[in-house]
Image 1 (cartoon, rainbow, N blue to C red):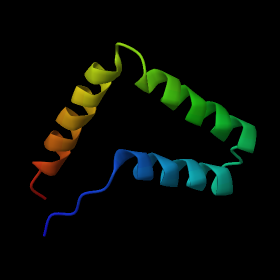
Image 2 (cartoon, rainbow, N blue to C red; image 1 turned 90 degrees about the horizontal axis):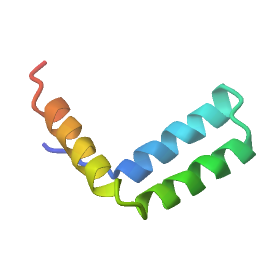
Image 3 (cartoon, rainbow, N blue to C red; image 1 turned 45 degrees about the vertical axis):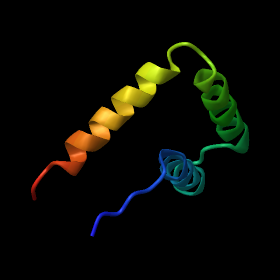
Image 4 (cartoon, rainbow, N blue to C red; image 1 turned 180 degrees about the horizontal axis):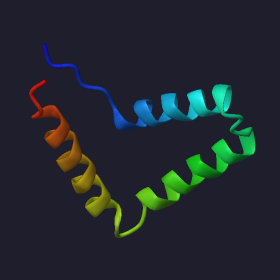
Length: 64
């Protein structure tokens, strides 16, 4: 079975865990969210997306 999860949901869960366990303040979470939205609108966004897809493919190809 292949399980796929959105990167946004995964990052959201990680931010939530940091908020609950490591004391991430709400203001830090808002800044990180805004940074992500602004970064998505820049010219570097396709490179970041391609790098993320490549990393996901690499992790998905590991045989444990």
